[in-house]
Amino acid sequence: MLTDRDTLLRKLHELRSEHRDLDTVISRMAQQVTDQLQLQRLKKRKLLLKDEITWLESRMIPDSIA
Image (cartoon, one colour):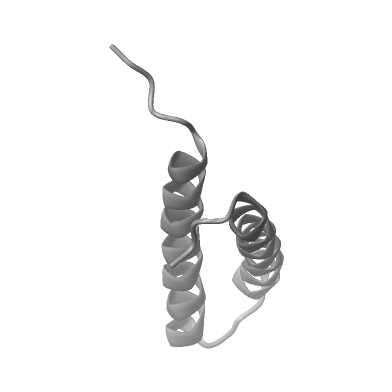
């Protein structure tokens, strides 16, 4: 899967960018009377992205010897 550090960094950058974009869209939608179902879907997607970002970041940190 994703093992090369450059590939991990590139994917991490893409996920962070999408996460920021969703944050902006969600903020704008929350200020308007809008489709609540769509808003919930965007929020769920944002949470999934955050989980994936965290997972990728943890893969990039070398294991330390206790």
